[in-house]
Length: 119
Image (cartoon, rainbow, N blue to C red; front, side):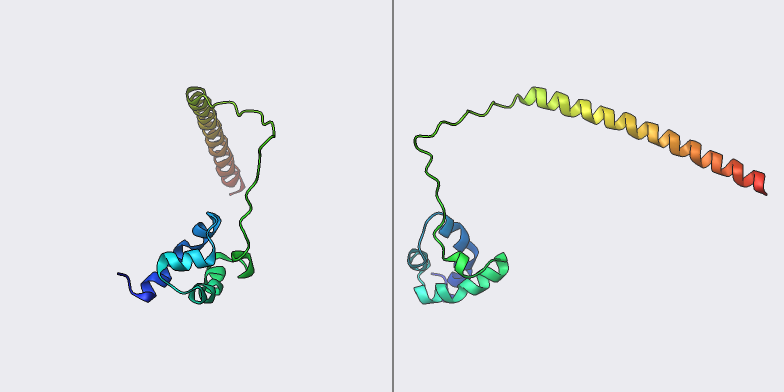
């Protein structure tokens, strides 16, 4: 059996996930063998780590009810076509990089010629 401190740390690590699953503070406390007051007491620490308010950790998670609504199905992704297009973009980027390298080399060469002429 875990020590109370270990159970408290474990609860703190999992609180947000469990709460989003719809579990209450009392249920979470019972799950870890802690008192509800211990869980409430640690909410400020959890909130600070998550960058939210303590009160937001107590709000009931929103669950949407989509019954009776018509949704357009999402078109499945053709992974072969996606990979082909990705490789095409990658090839174009390589060509652009090569052209830029040539332009930079020419500019550096011109700068050397100008420096030699000034001397």
